[in-house]
Image (cartoon, rainbow, N blue to C red; front, side):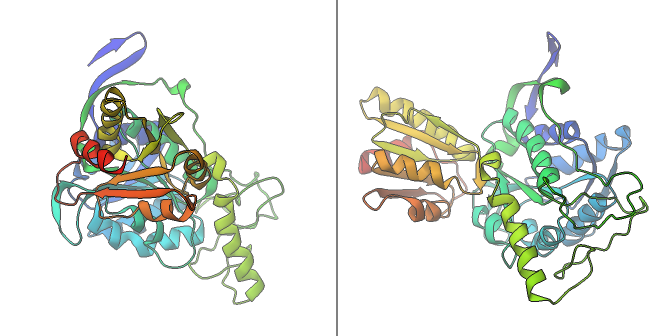
Length: 382
């Protein structure tokens, strides 16, 4: 490690960058259960958090890991857990609880090949739809996906900011390629990024209601357990005090609030990157580790005279439908490349123009998609 000006320059793994980003965001509680290929995240949190006055606990399983993460957030600490596909499945019931009870927390899913135990150390992007629909019922979903080690750092901070701002669990969907990739990165200074902390009740507010949204605000102000405010938490439909209600009007108002606090602020949440799309006759849509191969494929295609571009969703969910719809108005061919047999291609089909053609290239043998494979598929579709 060396210094470049005031910035630290370091050779860092994606999983390590995730931990460093979380700590920079203010994470001081980690609960989880070790699972390949996310294990380094737990190991580093166990090493670093006690030094900072934070808390690390290894639970007996993934279900308990998610429950403890919820508890840490309710107690007032920014909280995180990390896992991979099988553990992500086990966490889903408590993820739904966190979404319903509006408990901010961050879940890191370092995706590996499945289903079931699958290929524990092999890359995959098979959890994309699980992030969207893994827990039952209508619920908000925010999921980000890095394509570099530095972005793993930056997006982990952003995950915490979004979780706190919208009082909801937020996912970092990091495939094994990025989780175990090592790159030289410059760690930004603390004054170079924004940190958002949850809004708390006004001091000694005698009228505090745990789930009342005040005028001009997006979510209820959140007291911590032990702060002295009345606070009831449940997975049932609840009123502004947090107590269960079966009233149909209360149910509709609550569930619409859960969804609308995200959908109404989609422009604040959704980010993406474009490369050579201005005149593209075919656009590749790729994310995570695959986007790195797709970018190189675009460069090679351009050299060969093919007008190809890349659209990389950084926010997987909410789906960037406005921009993709606009792209298909001028680009009549879309190729979705992903390490699964066709997950993110589904919403692309939904929002495309009727005369646009969508192609999909998937790979599930535990090996990364290469630029050469993408180029071959582009030539077929071009």
